[in-house]
Image (cartoon, rainbow, N blue to C red; front, side):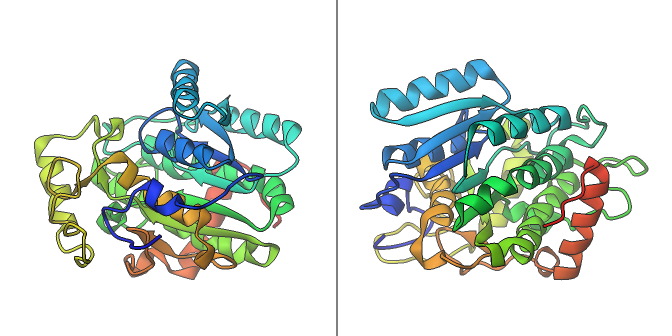
Amino acid sequence: MATSGPTTTTEDVLAGVDLAGKRVLVTGASGGLGLETARALASHGAEVILAARDAAKTDAALRTIREQVPDAKVSGTDLDLASLASVRACAARLRQQLDRLDLLINNAGVMACPLARTADGFELQFGTNHLGHFLFTGLLVPLLVTGAPARVVNLSSDGHMLSDVHWDDPSFERHDYEKWASYGQSKTANVLFSVELERRLGKKGVHAWAVHPGMIMTDLGRHLTADDVAMLQSMTKGRGEKKDGESSGGGGRAGGGMPGFKTIPQGAATSVWAATAPELEGRGGGYLADCTEATKPKPWALDAVSAGRLWAISEKMVGETFAF
């Protein structure tokens, strides 16, 4: 990869890369960034499993990939991260079907939605973005350890800057719900989860990274108002420094048609880079954006004590204790 920055695409990241023999699972892969991530990895030889809650959309995504990559090794599996029963059922199927997993990309998520709750009563954004992936990843750890060196990529966001975890009420059961506070805490949780995963599994050859993909116009933003978009654009100003041949970072047009917005191949690039970059081999626990390690999250998102605290709370909420 000659350059890295906001305009880097998945094809830039994977130029000359051979992923034959790698087995990857991507959550939320029926559209948007997940679909592009799956397509890009499959186009370079990886075996890719698309996990999503809508079977019809997953089937359509598989057809799209096979049309673009005729020899793609792709399959689908049902996964609803807003249901712990679905998470457990999917993980059980995968453990029965697979002997190992090399890469797990926790891409699925919801953003700034009205107050809603998961099947288990958790606030939807925290329940889907963090708790669903927390349980799913934990149940798949045996496959990742067998596949080591392996990586887990957790999609976070600069939205983590909006809020630390609401430690006394993460599901907004006693406090008034605010969509951005909820989204922010879920994205902070994604980073803290990566920090604690690295601490627990790094010595076993499984490394975790949190990723900020940038702002991209996908179905994830279906609840956004014009004011919401303006607020998000203001957050991107000043991200990254302009490099030769690149458009400016957050404040410029990175090919997405609106100031600060990326195209889908640009938005998926950092996930693909986190999953495959040789320079990241053997380490993790950090926060990546624009295919670099240059960006630092808010201090609360990398706090090791908070990461352990979130792990303990999450185990209690999902009713599962992990010994690794």
